[in-house]
Length: 167
Image 1 (cartoon, rainbow, N blue to C red):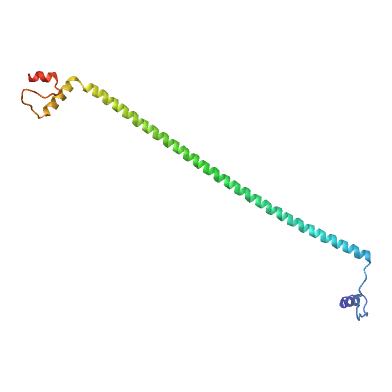
Image 2 (tube, rainbow, N blue to C red):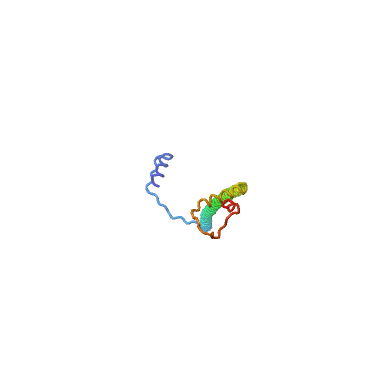
């Protein structure tokens, strides 16, 4: 402080030399001191309220992020559930188509079997004429190698035409 005063004096009033500087503790009037303390108290309160507001904003931001994260998780879960539902629906439709194909195939096989059997029955009806039956009877008798001798012939089924042949 002494050097600062000496520099000012040398510039404006040469020849003045400052030997020492004494600073006396000043007494501040009570009203100014109270006013200063009140202003400091208000400033402190303002700083505290600003800090509280910042903390509240951070908490709100954190809570907003948590809500956003929860919504995102819920949306992902909803999408996954919808995807699983669609997969099951697709699988069910595919199974229905396979079942319909199986039923159609079985019905077609049944119809073809029925048609074949009907044609065979019709062919057999046309084939089984009395002449054909007589031919088969004669073939069966011709294969029989048993010959009976004597006056009494054992009881057996014999066609009347066959008996006429042997008489």
